[in-house]
Image (cartoon, helix red, strand yellow):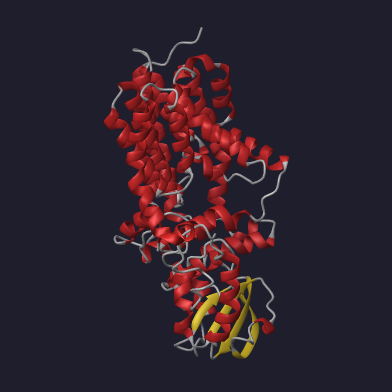
Length: 515
């Protein structure tokens, strides 16, 4: 017969897990090279705004505050380091309220199981999901408590946290949908839904106002431009299912499915977890669901684990997770500290060096540039990484892609008229004919920098007018075809470059007759 784990033992497991994962997180935050995504979001902090091209503004606001202290990676990642530890405390607090008297140990163990998952301790890298997970956690905690206590004020507060999550990333809508469906099963449903919406609306209104005055770029990116590659297929469904087994771990999933009766009565939590995960399953029919998409919903599963699990087995799950973490720790250690040559694929070796040694690479790539020359590159992720280490914006020369087009907001090609331009591209052959329309005296050279082959294009007398008429107009036709039903109160990109008509500036869309 299994002997139950008592409360002091469970707390000891939790605090040891907190200590161990904190050490690992600090190690990663201190030594892992800045990623392209992190560098991109760091740029947002340098140009604070009410929104950004790809997403709502919350991570830009967070990083703006942190960057006032330091731009070092460990500072930029500091709030992310604390995130899953804070979520683990939330799991303990909520599970402790839901468990019968005398079973508090399971709440502490559930928090430890969550925190010991690899996806929890290696989540130190800055993404838009950082504030999303935080505010979703607060929304779920507040919503569950308000449902249990019948607090109308708590529902409004849950709506406020949901609105803040919405200002972090649009996936918060899935949680709002789950709350709405659950409230339909409750008495006084209309009043409760109204209170929830009352909390959300100010934040949603801010986002709508930003979009109406900024080319609807959030909406265009998330609902239009990024879905051209979507297609039906079972491969993406299997990928999603496999990803969920990895994230939640087989032992946690087995416990939840084996003991459904223990948690299915907690409908607020059931809706908060399974409605979004079910919607992601539908999305996976024609699009790959990213690992980070689901992280904000996972903590609910560990509250349910506290209700369903056996304390002895839950303590073992922490050890199972520790064993599962070993290859992850080894992999991160090799990426940070081992010679790049240990990796069998040359392109991966070069990618490791590119991230590790960017300051030295930039020093060589900028050597010999005229004082007024502009350093550019051909893709957004390298551009963001170079910008972070260069200390000034490195624009993307060309039409770019639908991802990460915040260049459209804070780069002004008019200011580069007549200047020399240097274009660098990693391991990519470049046809000089592509640039002779916009630059004179074009010279193409190949350089090997830190073992990485670069193609470097130098040209003089940048011709803004031709660049505008060909490259920027191409961007307008691809990424700024705003649906006619939407009112375009302003579009800084279109106004800056004289594309007012193409971007429909001043058109009221559905409300055209009200002007």
